[in-house]
Length: 188
Image (cartoon, helix red, strand yellow):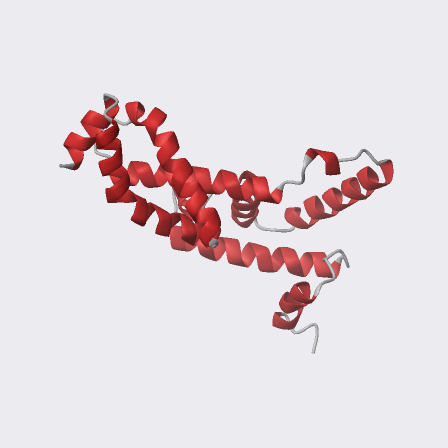
């Protein structure tokens, strides 16, 4: 039934698109909610997934990839794009200020120096995760390692990076930042 609905929807049949929506909107909503952790945002993104499906469905070809996996990947990409937009400041907030630029350069230099203290694989995992934005599974695939080893490298890299930033007195001073210090036995 799903194959027939997909084939008809690819030909522009709106009723077939409705069938796909009824069948997959619930699981896609739950998947997206797990990423964005907000019911309303998840509803909006789920609607966006099915809106985008109208134009993207013609690209789907069942070469060993189940439709739901393909649809979930589309949902994941849209959810991650949404999360990235939330993290980036609006263009109006990006005012050129040389003191801010100098402070940013100094922080970047400090972070780069701290990253250089990490073993190569830990540094690579931390950079791929936090700068490139890859998931642990994508990093594992790229590095030819298991996902659990990536989680381990990521955790050890973050702890070592935090330790080095604390040593350089460059760690952010917040209550959340004191947790790694407690773990390391540096604060009571």
